[in-house]
Length: 226
Length: 226
Image 1 (cartoon, each protein chain N blue to C red):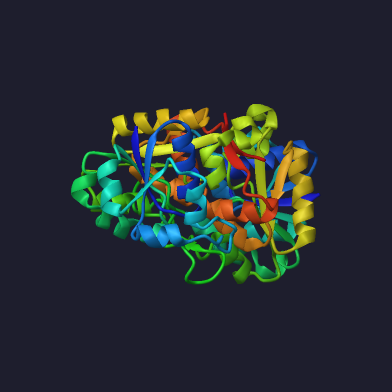
Image 2 (cartoon, one colour):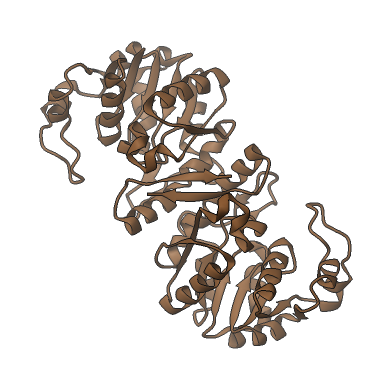
C-alpha cells in the first residue's frame, strides 16, 4: 500500500522503517524536505537526525506535506501533538478526504516544564480535535500508548504478549488499521469503540511517563488481563 | 491490625470483608450508623444494602466517622471521590494524624451524564487534594485501578498475574500498604513514586470504563509487561 507518514522524529522514523520493511510504498511528509534531509546530528534523546536516518532507509520517499497527503492511501500522524492540526492543514484537507488516518500523536504539553501535562483531556482529546477539523478523514487512534520501537515491533517486549488499543468512528478504517498492526506483530488488539475512547488512551500517558521513569526503559507495555 | 474503612458501598464492603477475613480488627465508618444498617435492599448496580451485607459479616464493627478515625491504625478511603474530603473532615484531622490512608477513591463526576468525567486531573489529583488538606496524613494511592472484587482478591483474574500501582510521599506508609496488598494476593506491586503519580492512576479510569463496556465484565486488570 501507499502510506504517508507525517513526522520525521522518532515515531515517524520507526513507523516508516517498519512499513517499508513490510513492503509498503512509504513517503514521509515534512514541511521542508531539504532542511529535514540536512539534519544529520542526533537530537537530545538520541534520535538520529532525519537525514542520517534516511541515508540508511533509501527506499522511503520524502516529500512535502501536500505530496505526502496525495501519496498516501493510508495516513499516519506521527507529529508531535501540538503540530498535528497545522501539519494536516498544510497537507490539504482535499487530499486527505475519505482516507484512514492513524493518529499516533499525544497532546503532550512541555511548556510548563517536566513532566509534561496534556493540552487536552477528560472531556475531549487530540484525536477528536482532528476528527472535528477534518470530518472527511477517518481518524483511528492507535499505537499512541507505547514507545516508538515497541509500536513498530511489539515482539521487542514480552514476546508481543500485550495489548494495543484502537478506536474510531469508521469500522472499515479500523479494520484496515487492525490488519496493518497485526502485520507489525500485534496480537491482542482491543477495539474500544468510537473516537471519544481516545480520551482514555491519551490519558494513559501520565502513567506511561511515570512507568518509564521507574522502569528506566521505554521497553514495556500494558496487557489487559481478562 | 486495627483498620478503619470509610465507605459502605461496593468498595468498602469488599475491602472490609477481605481485611476481616485476614484477621484484622475492622471498623467501617459511616455518617449515620443506624441509617446505614437499615439499608437492606441492593442498589442499582446490585451492591447489597449495607445492613444486609453486615448481617453476613458480623465481625466487622460499624461506627461513626470519628469512631472509625480513632479506631484505625490504618485508614482506607473507600468513599466516592466527591465525598472523600468531607468524610475525612468529619472523621477529624486530629484522629487521622500520622496514620497511613489508602486512597482507593476516584474523582468520578457523574453530574454531566455518562460516561463520568474526572472532577480533577492532569495537573492535580484527588489523592493530592487529600494530602494537601490533611498534611499529617500519609496518603498512599492504591487499589483504585481495579474493580472492588479484583482489588480485594486479585487471583479472581488471570491467577493474579497483573499489576497494582502504589504511590505516596511516605516510604514507611507505602511499605505498610504494600505488605497489606501482598496479603490480598497482589504479586506485582509497582511503586510509582510520590503522590503526584496519582494523576496517572486516576487518569486510567476513562480507559478502564471503556474496557468495562467492551469486555462486559469488571473482572480484568492491566499488567505491565516488561
